[in-house]
Image (cartoon, rainbow, N blue to C red; front, side, top):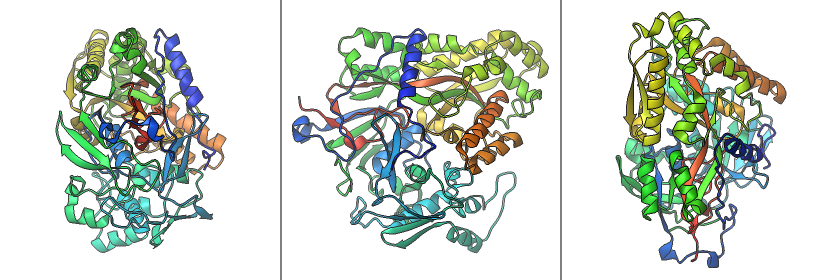
Length: 593
């Protein structure tokens, strides 16, 4: 289908982001990787190297999970897209936008009121040869709603986004840590049976919503909706994703896994992949490398074919005749921030003027974002005091927030004094968690120094590997955390709902504010798009001005190197995860030399 009416094509606007970066003092360009097939079209045999050369090595962080219903970090999502596909999938349009198109579905849904009926393509199989049926999609959806799984993306099936009937009631059946519930097994089963996902027969699934949604096929393209095999998960439990146990329906399967820092996962083609193109690559080895300086060196010595690169190396890359042709900079719908755990006694409280608010305000106003971006990231990114990124409907930008939370040392000092810590007296030492790689540690050190020099407070840096970082965030074991959000689909609801409403699945900083909740609830039920966008703008204004769990710092771009032998890459800053062109890894191939 064409993009739903609430989806905004971002290609042109993200191109403007790159222009804005260049105007801000950088000279970044975008290299072109040629030979890109469209999904559904295979490159000609003449364009491809022989089969024995169709092997590549790619850099990424280590996933916390290889389980689509549990994944919420980009390195996890990147692998999930290689292993599974849903009823629909996202692909690029000619104008640079994004649209949802049938994947395992035979076509568009039949809609009767709020009941969506989807027919599957005939003859679908799992990687082990077992028939892929509508029951597997029913199980996958109900597994995402399951309170015992507690998937971080449950909320996309709840009120405010898709609102599958019964999913939220089932997902909330165990209550919260503060207010636990103890339903019986029979009560839990009744709630599960009431979830509005039902296999009518082997090739037909019926999904019942509370009301019609223009974004149905878009949400059903995301990993929470991927199919799952009940027999495999029941048999192996948490080990169902281990090599030898895991079954997939996407273009690749896992054939090898070495866990831990410095480990890797090996992917090979799924012989039962149903769609076109069939993967040309015979093997993809994804190496877990957090240190991008080390990854950059490995690329230069031919040990990696695709890697993320650190922004400080941009001048070196641009000055090199070969590397400059392999450099990819892609404007991204990514916002980066200092995330602050709101249940920490020093940071809690959303009311303007409260003690915790003033501490958060002091931390935010002590950050010289423009200098940070210049010194740490070589002006590769845009300093940001906003949360909803440039390129999304309702973008408000720095002008709306800079005088409220932006850099102002005197205002930062006053806020800390108003919080009861004049000149930092009596302020406890906080911990800032960062990814253990040079640029992220440099960013942490910049902030550590700024807070010491401006506020006279001490912040210790905790540098951890990618998997530990994900777990630290998801278990809320942090004070301050360098993180952010990359859009899953190009709509402002995706960067707000579930992230800032009380109890939201990705609200790990525990933002809880009745005004924010009310605006997000209103946006979720509003059918007039202009009013919906206004509600979301109002929610963003409350989130940012109250610093409810986040202090935005910069809007990013993806920086990659891809060996010139690579074909089929089509990077997209709206929907890529961890790797360039990750929305269609089956399109990748090694070019004939």
